Image (tube, rainbow, N blue to C red; front, side, top):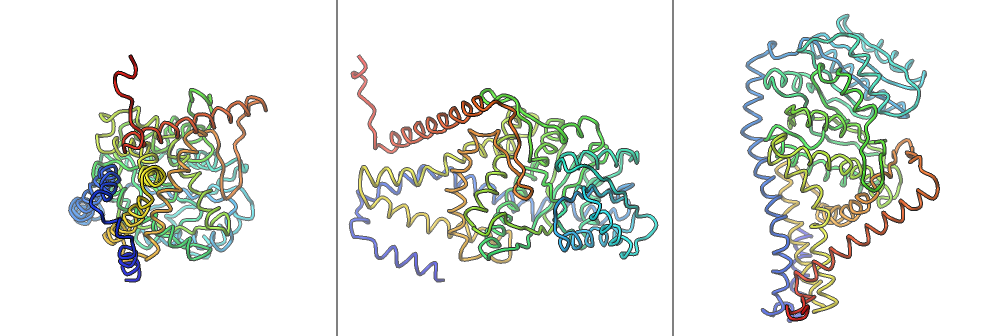
Length: 491
C-alpha cells in the first residue's frame, strides 16, 4: 500500500508539462521498445500456468496410479562437499540419509569429498541414522582439484556398480537439503515419461546474512520457477542445476558424458581455447541437449539451499555471484544456439537466444530516457521513473502465481537485477575467459604470457566499448534523437 501511495504521490507531483499531449509522446517511444519484452514475459507466465496447473498435474496423477511400478530399479545419490561448514554438512547429510531411509527402495549413496575429517564426520552421521541394510554408503576421496573432478570421480564410482537401464542417479550439492518426500516425487517421473534423460526441481533458500540477501534470493528463485516451468512445457529446461538434478544412470555413467563434465572448453575466435572452471551443471545440460534427450522441471518438489554470500556488502556479493552465473550461461548458450531449433524445439531455442539479446534490450529504456533527457526534454526521465514504478509493481504481483508472498522491495530489486545484471552480462560477454569460484576463491589461469594477457584484455575492452557505441547510436537513431542524413548527402 505504501508503494502504491508513493507511486500516486509521484505522479501527482509531476510538473503540468509532463502531461502535455505532445510531450507524452516519449512514453510511447519507450513503451513501444519494451512491448515485445513484456509480451515475452506474459507468454512465459501463460505457459507456466498451463504447465503448473494442467500438464504437470496429469503426469503426477499417472505416477500416483502406477505406484511401485513407477519406481526405478535402483537409486544412486551422489553428494559432493568441499569447504562447507560443519553445521551445514550435518544438516545436508541428515536430509539425504533421512530421505534415503524413507524412500523404501534400494539406495546407494556416493559421497565425493576431499578432507579426511569430512569422511569421518559423514560416516558418523550415517551410523547415527540407523540405516537399513539395502542402503549403502560409498566414500570417494580426491585431491582438492575442483568440483568437476569430484563429480567425475563420483560418476565413475557409480559406473563401477554397473547400474541397469532403469536405474536413476541424483546429483546433490553439499549445501542443498532435500525436503521430505522429494525422492518419492522425482524418481517415478522417469517411468511416467520414459524418454526423458534428466530432471531438476524448484529451489528455496536459507540465507546467512542481511535481510536484503534473503529477499534477493527469494525473488530470483520465484522468477526461476516461472521460466523453468514455461520451458519445461516443451520438455526442455534452461539448466540442470547442480543443487539437485536427477539423471538416468545410463547417461551419467557414459564415458563421453563424464569427460564433458570433467574437462569442458570452448574455442573462442578472439580468446582462443579455454577450459571451464565453473558451470559443471551447464556442461551436463549441454550434453543432454546435443544428444536430444528431453528434460523436465518438477515444480512441486523443492530443494532448500543454504546460501552464504561471499561478502557482507550486498553490492559486492550480488555482482560477484551474477558474474559467475552469467558467465556460466554465456559460455554455454552460444554453442546451444548453434544446435538449432530442430534439435531442441522452437521455444527453448528462442529462450536461449533471448538470454543473449536481453542484456541489450533491458538497457534500452534507461538509455533512451537518459538520451532524451539530455537532448530533448528534462521531463523524459520523469516519464521513465513513473513507468518503471508501475511496471515493476505489476511484475511483482505476477510473482504471486509462483509464491504465496511477495515483498515490497521486489520492484526495486527487479529493476536492480535488470540494469546491473544487464551491465554485468555485457562485461562478461566480452571476457568469457575470466572465471572465478566465489566460495573457494579459485581463479582459472589462462596460460598466456603477460603480454598476450594484456593484449587480450585490451581487445576485450575495445570490443565492449565498440558494442556499446553501436547500441547507443542505434537507439538514438530509432528514437529520433539523431537524424539520418538525407539521401542526397551521400552523392
